[in-house]
Image 1 (cartoon, rainbow, N blue to C red):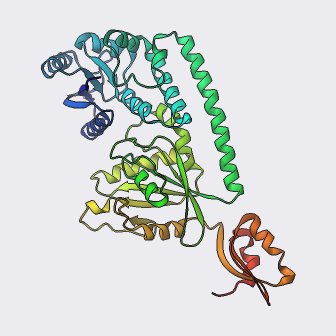
Image 2 (image 1 turned 135 degrees about the horizontal axis):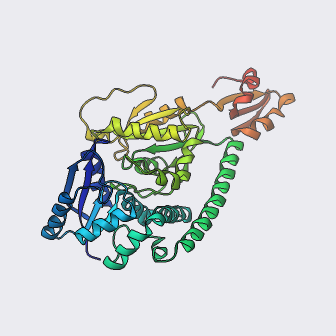
Image 3 (image 1 turned 60 degrees about the vertical axis):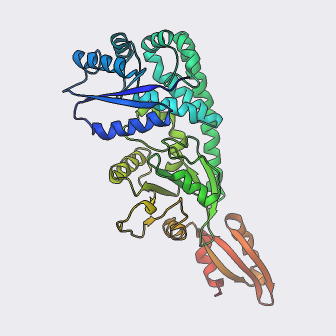
Length: 408
């Protein structure tokens, strides 16, 4: 398939920063493997109901397509079926919107069975009300970006079939959600603490996970490099274990139905014991992007969970950024600041256990079984005075065990 030459189109109604949004859309286009050749922006009080931008501006877009050889228009908003059809009839160029582009990237990047199910469900739910417009465009102009992945074969079938498929996918995902719920319950029972790595897309979350755990997760300088939740355990300086879970990157103006579709990768954050918020320190929009992340976490009900802010890519900046007890500077790429990061995580992770050196008299040796039940014994030595333990003790036992605590 020849590389698609794309013109980005936006109507500036003052609702959001159009330039910043188009810059992000341009990155998405690059991630999808296409080339942006021009941008068209029209200032308007409101979107035109028929074609988003006005008739005159649309005629300009058509001329630009002919002149530059563009074969795809991407609108930086959600389009209805009739808008897609109207714009294509006027320009004779295939049209998709921001959400369809994101879904296309998701389709190409989902790896696990669950990720693929989520992509297909999101595509079908999004395309069902737009079948009239999209179906016509596919049959007339062929495939390309916005048409890949699970779901494309359903576009030319009847709505009833698609609805049946949506119901089936929903049921399958519910089963997987239940399984994940059981896994989370088991982790809580086994006293496994979880840290969710969250942040804006392309902030370096997967690179950090790879560095800390050797997880081997795809880490590219592209948007949405990771779509499937990956979890790996690390040991903190105080002896506690932390299960790290990577989540899908967030993005400005992520459509609500996409947040819904990928809720499972994000809901790991809502049930985590600590959130590791990775920010790109070299990004001029770091504050705005951090706000998007924190707002999304609040929507998921995770606002009460402690957050460690990780300022990544510090190798790219020269100015000094102040830190505090919940903020740490690192370079995941060059393995800098990682020891301090682990200490900061341990400091902010809620105390559910404590590493203790204990000398249990032989008549109290049965207490070691209680420690093992919800904790961990690193070493055990039988001495003339009792059993010497190096153990991770559950919070409910710390007070009881403190009378047996000994120094190093």
